[in-house]
Image 1 (cartoon, rainbow, N blue to C red):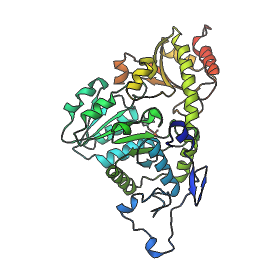
Image 2 (image 1 turned 45 degrees about the vertical axis):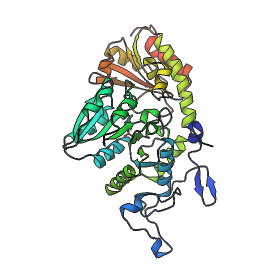
Image 3 (image 1 turned 60 degrees about the vertical axis):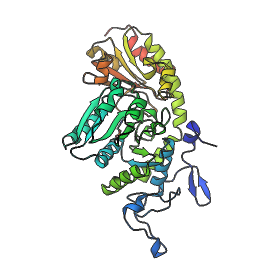
Image 4 (image 1 turned 90 degrees about the horizontal axis):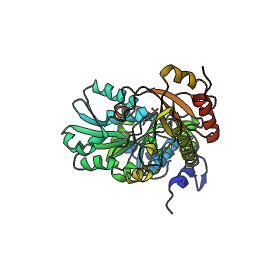
Length: 395
Ligand SMILES: *Cc1c(COP(=O)(O)O)cnc(C)c1O
């Protein structure tokens, strides 16, 4: 029987212990391993970085690089993302850093979807300063990507749905255009929470994940991953991770699996809540725009693009001027004001979309609120929004 979706998520923590299994992945911190027999001590070389079997205990030689816990977490995250191999990194940002470090050098060219999150742009600027040429493309240029690939193009990178605007990119068209070019096709699939879309199934070479959001924000853990189906890609990424000391802690890996085991139930609840809350917001005349994949297209249009559901992030543009908006924001009681998303608590973050090309295309500018719906009762969240933003009481 093939475990899929919520079943795979619920059982992600099962860990082999001798002939039995534990329901929780233990956090085994170790830096030194010892062998009973001299020739069982593996040499430290690139070959020994490759997992030799499915057992998380096989082939370990230095705990900074891997422990049974980190091996198991990498294997489980690769499976959830429908890949074969994962390299875990201390954050989503460090996953992108490892990708660029391992796969590009000065003089190379990378093509990037212009709806990527601003922190990815900052990282690309840093690599730009070190000789990598970064060129952006808009989603409507997907069918012309073929003409922008050069001999020195190493990566084509975009996000499944753009950060803050949830603008859709026709991934299949870009992947098709890259088929006969050696550039690696890389999708930052964080938004999908290993649930809503699986680009590796559709021939992407690498998926980037920030596990610090839907996957593990409930545990407060920072972790990232690069997932692939290709042994050759994994080999390079794992080698550069080891070379640069890009290791992850067993504690974080055990925590990430613990929180993923409730991810299916969390997403289910949040999907129901966000639909109710959007319906309420849409009916308010002071809401000028509501950005969410389902506000921009129908469910079947999304499914045609291999997107099988949505998380609970929405971006709202109100008719209020900046100062009024901020005053009203201060009246929220249940929804908290903060950065980050994916935890149990609903959050609102003011975001200025003036320099966001995706927002400009959608004709949204100025300060908006990015709202993340957590696990509270949707009725309570709606009352909180009502009190803060829509009650007639004057200031
Ligand atoms: C948050 C985020 C990142 C960065 O991940 P961290 O784990 O916070 O470093 C990268 N890409 C996307 C789409 C994100 O939402």
